Length: 121
Image 1: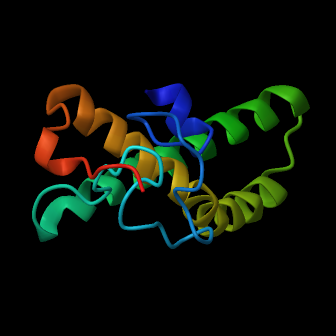
Image 2: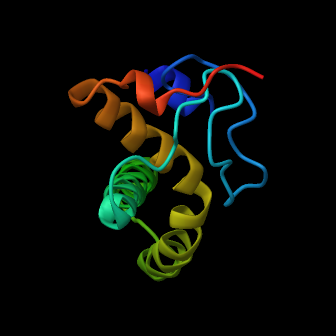
């Protein structure tokens, strides 16, 4: 399910077309009809959590890689400004992946019920 989510496909069936734009997801999967926003209004908080953790991991990996690559004399000023820029850009770039990764995580622990799946059109 995670590999499907990282390809921006439905974690449940693998269908494409989940997102109408980078930030706007469809209400249901076009393939299996799974409701993409499961649960109550607090469901989106899980996506935000995955997005924050993902952005922080990206920052840590990139900055560690840059420090190791430029050792013994890392350009600290450049790394400071690059980290600020990356922290602004990474959550926006990672958002659709975070949303689908959280859906995959949720489906792992709460499998889709028949009433959450709409018949194919």
